[in-house]
Image 1 (cartoon, rainbow, N blue to C red):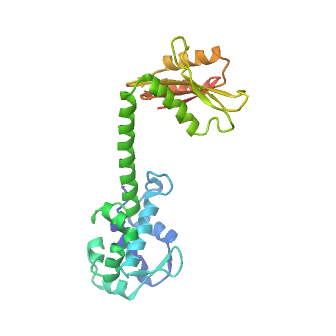
Image 2: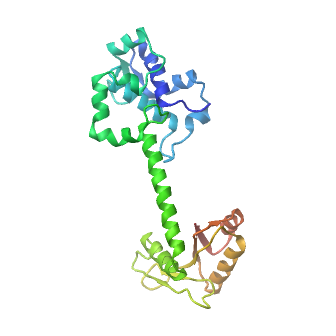
Image 3: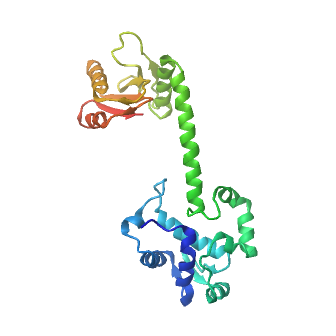
Length: 266
């Protein structure tokens, strides 16, 4: 089943703590997974950042919000226990402990109004299943995707010559040539598919050959094979193929088992 929203976890978490014991987040995750019948796959589903599981993140934020509302307290990092206010709530429990429910407490109102959390709270909707951290990640990814789309549109509107220069600059910024080498655009008539060269050292002993292709749609294996042929003609060991389009699965599989080594960047 889907991972419950962090506001769906607050009441069950408070009920866990009703025994008066000091609970660890690790033990709480185990018990709450049983309550919601979450599979291992459900519990291991990652946030978009890939740094933490969605389930662990939401359990942690449920704890934070209950603490900010004064229903739990934390005797040590990663631990929690019920307070007198928490016991009073359980005497006549609501259907759910939501942001709106917790807003009746002055401590929680102060927590929500602090400037340090304001950016999270402005993004997050009161009835959202997402934790504040998830809401920030979602907003960041949306902004990043929009920025990427705008940049790609601008690149496509420029000349092929501009794109070739851009690719050389990009590789230099990524660290190629950082040992004192340099880069240059060489794309022209009769370039045999080579649009740029990055020298990874001052003597030019390690060279990376580039192809920059402004492309609508998918770049297939035949185009990559032409580039590889050009690399063989230069006795090159390293190549980078950069496109404004995308690569077919066949093209991606092809470069895995060839010499020279070729990196595909879409």
